[in-house]
Length: 219
Image (cartoon, rainbow, N blue to C red; front, side, top):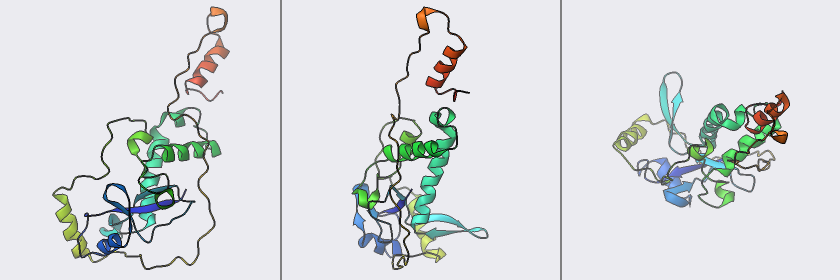
């Protein structure tokens, strides 16, 4: 799965490298932008935060980093939560095979918020609440600024460890395509089960009902 990077204007000092990236970037919805270093094209699947991300740095510090590697880490973390808590992966997609991967990719892409052209941002920005099946009121893409923003700006100025890779060119880009998914209902309607001839359900009937409910893999 190919993941591109996005940034948010106004979340770093005006004299920082990230501000220059924002000025030369492609603007998308909600004050977000696609930095120059991000991957683009029809192969792109998703996008995630990849500008001015606070990351751990060996041995015991932190650094302000940019890159699609940071964006991919956000999507990976959400994928882990989906595999651990989504009901689909406790039932029919519990087996570790290609169908499990396809279902995971479908959930990530189909529940993402579109924020720009697919060649710039893929299916959009992953939405953790929708992906995990926790339906709630839609929140705006732009998070309100708070007192912590001043501290972050100060930290960016003082750390002097900013990894600025906008001018770096990728000398090799392996061929790849968009992640293929088998489209299934994200929230299928529960199917009612009725035993034949109105009789009491037997063992085979109960197994079939459990499979429909996602409580058994048929074994």
